[in-house]
Every structure is written in structure tokens, then in C-alpha cells.
Length: 275
Image (cartoon, rainbow, N blue to C red; front, top):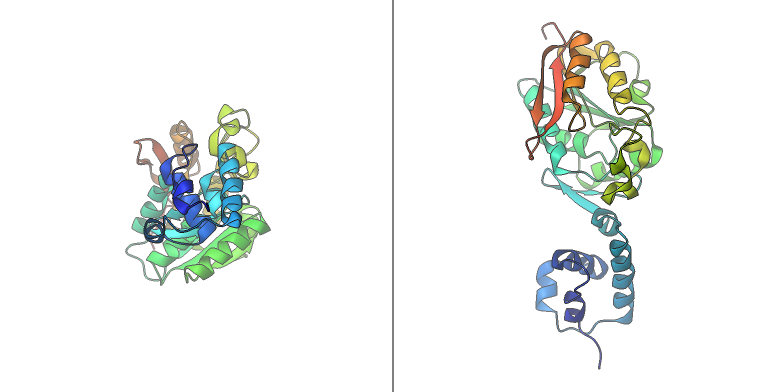
């Protein structure tokens, strides 16, 4: 007797939600279709494809890489092992960015180390008049970001290079944002959970976790317009150190904001002067 789709839906090795997501992916069908067709025959090809993904998940590979996408700020982004998986904690960076440019017409925004493009594209979609530039040192990451921009009909400019080296001379910005590598090289979390499968270069600076944050703060004054803002994501225990970097560089109104878990997740400040 031919097995039915519901035989896979009852797979007890994985959480029910993950089973459904993997099935939706291999069948290219939505949840409603699965529920309405759970007694349909299961082809050997489908069973084989599902089992391959299930084994990868059981080995710890992130669901986002298995199904090739993740939702962020209400949009679905493609993700591959070339980019970090967008996380809800980072949404506070986008929300703060939008507040910073709320009163400006056609604001110029720079996202350093864009990865999947989730931050830059979310800003561009919320502010269609904004002139958004997104940089990354990885050509593979930029390819993922460009595909996401195409899928979501977002208008922005991508540039390749390390931090400000990627920015064309003479460009000035009302806002700079970044979610840089901020995990210390000896942090045990690098060997745990999803991060084991994410690009190491997007997670750690191979130093104390503050190296790239220092570079971003130090270079920002040359690229910010008077009155412009800089906001960066950082680790759970780095807020005080990042605020000190910002204050030491001459930023005003330096403060941090909390993520959904109540952790000081981002810090930023305003470059002196009036727009």
C-alpha cells in the first residue's frame, strides 16, 4: 500500500512545526494544501527529499538554511550559508533607523556589512524615497542581498568592500547602520546551535568582539552629514563599551536600546551639527 503524506506529518523525530515546514518546502505547497491533501499518496521522490532534509535538521543545521528563507520585518528573505540568518533581535535596529530618518526627505542611508540585505532592504521598503547603500566584503553575500532586493522590489545600491573602503569618495549619509561581527573569537557560543553553520566571518572579528565596532565608529565621522546618526548592533554585554567608543569619538546623545528580550542590543549616537 502506498504511503500517504500524513505519514510524514506524523514524523516524531522533529517538532511538528519543523516537519510541516520541511514538507511544505519539498512539496512546494502551503500549509492549507497539506491539510487538505494529507491522504494523497506520497511519491518516493518526496519521501527521499524529506528524509534528506530531516537528517540535516537532526544534525543541527538551521531550518532557515534547509528551506532557504526566513521572515524579517514582515518580509521573506532568501538565506544561504553565505549569510547570517536574520533574527528578530535585529528588528530594533531597523525600527530605530526609521525613527532617525522620519523627518527627512530622501535620506541617505548606509548599511555596512549587509549580509542578506535584511536591514537595508527593510529600510528601503519602509522609506521608498530613501537613497540606501549597502556594503559587504563578500561577493556571495551581496549576490544573496541583490536577489532579495529583486524579489521584494526594493531600490538600493550595493557596493563590495571592507567597511568604509566600499563607499565611493564624496558620499555623505544621514544615517549609518551596521550589524557587524561582534562575537569574541574564544566565545564558546561559536560552537553551539545554529551559529555552527553560519559564516564565521560574519560572526566574529577573530579578536575581542569589538574590533569591527571600533573601525565603524572611527570611520563614521568622515561619512556622516552634520546631525547624522550611527547605530550598531552588538553583543549582550558590550553596550557600555560601545557607548564609550561613541562618546570618545565625539558623538552626542549616545545611548542604547533593548531588544525583545530586554537586552541592550544596539547603541548609537548623533554626529554634532545641524542638518
